[in-house]
Length: 267
Image 1: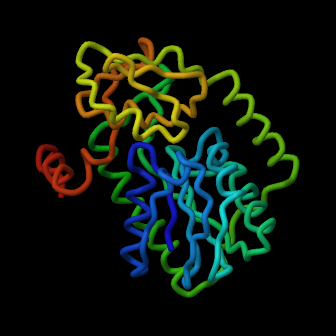
Image 2 (image 1 turned 45 degrees about the vertical axis):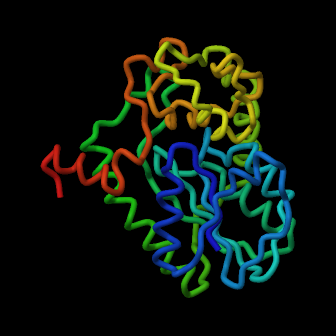
Image 3 (image 1 turned 180 degrees about the horizontal axis):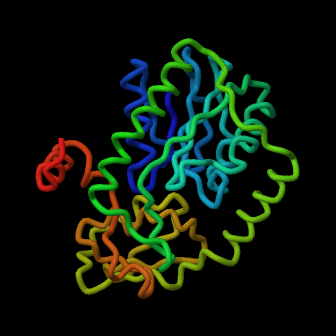
């Protein structure tokens, strides 16, 4: 079974592609995360957990969720990490720790480079449409690698991560969460239609509607789900996102993707 959390569609795209190649089913974890539902998930096939990378680590809220989650059936667990840089930092060590604590078999991980969706820093430019299309094409190679290993239930060899590197990266992730992810700069512009989509996609239940407008509370993962999923692009993060395109993979996949490729004269 393919399990995933996805904010703006990158990890969902990879998970569903992987499920199709393996003839397996995929499960979006967002509802379980939002409701703290850790009821048993069963699978006769190996588990494949697909997750984005935040600050070279598994999102802290997802790490906590997976530690509590109950699994049954097949004891083998693979991870697939998606990130704009194409590498997962110390996330592999965190993944292995989660699996071993459950007395399951850690089978390794695959990194998949995907378009960067983090818009809350001015010095990180948004990739062009051409670059995004190219990256999505290249991502298939790594997904194929993951599918090949999972189908044969073979271990994936990955870079060794020392305890010191893991501890330092986890500390950085905790620091970033505490001091570098304020939610006070999120706001909705006059384009907001009060649909509530932003509130429904927030993994931490951090957004609520008041008088038909979203209000952000203190706990925020900076996952960009609210910005990327707004149907009218009404959400901004201070002035940092005002001149940036609001990324969601739906623009580049499926029928929409065909339209974009046609506009760019790409196959």
